[in-house]
Length: 183
Image (cartoon, rainbow, N blue to C red; front, side, top):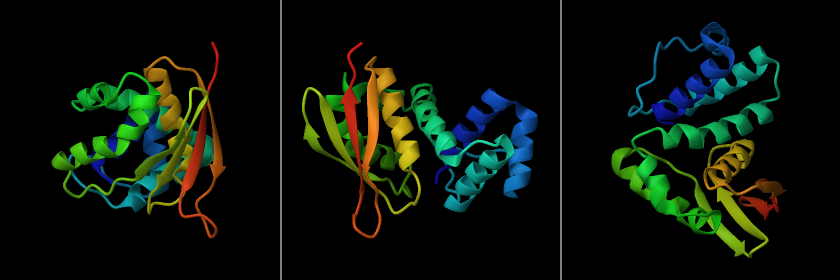
């Protein structure tokens, strides 16, 4: 993964738990890097090790941590130089979700080693969206749930998300049902 992912995770953990906790997490993960270069590519193992170590140090379920990171990722992206891509993706989830692959295609211009997930809107109604998510990286469904909540928050739309199909032996991809909640 690119360093901006690790930088975002570091920023979230420092913001929520302090610099000393971040150092304990890095030590637990066996990561001795002082900082991550946003444009550099790092082994996925580093990101996974940091997330697992954070779960252990914070005594928080990994799924809960990944959900929080997904929510934070949108905030982090909005504060980055790539915020314009999010702004151009659309004004609501009906417009944004079908554009996620295009957004990753544009990011690949700056990040040539990018190996993005793929998203496909399977169903789009006024009440819900059924979204398929596929990646070769394991165990990131909770991150996607958080990401969906982050995107919904960005456009001021309350939602509920159900992980209705898990990638595994019987299924090629994860599927999420995003339900729009009346305010």
